[in-house]
Image (cartoon, rainbow, N blue to C red; front, side, top):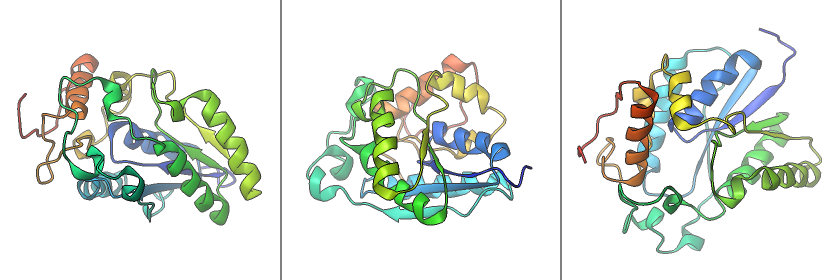
Length: 222
């Protein structure tokens, strides 16, 4: 390990992309800070449980303890499905149906303040190829990087190393990891994937396309 290498903050959700990303940056940095931000979304307790299980299994001295911060959105989201659980996008819904307005705006702002206070110079996100959301575009992230650096008087780099990769490619890269401890569902049943929401459908399809056995326990088979 290069002890002079900088530290990095990884915005973690417990899903496949950020889990694999966290594991892959470990050899590159002296300290890796996984950060989870609670926003009052209905799946967060389950998501956080599985994220903690996954990070525990990595067992790497460079991995810092998980930092959990709060940034509620229920006051602005109101009766949005992500808060109430009513009208959760199902298996047949389009990928962009799971858009959460301003999600990356909020996450990056909070993570940037954390970085400025802890001397961390980079934030990594698991943004994938074809992400259609306006706060995940290269233009937005470039503007955000400059704005945060200026507003905090702390030079920050926003990294999206998976920008050119698909979810099946992420699964193949991380097939040696405990992917059964990742969590993608937006309508969990207990601590299990529901098997009926659009995120479960996306997860199933990605494992199939990757040619990797899906270790996920779904409540519903359809």
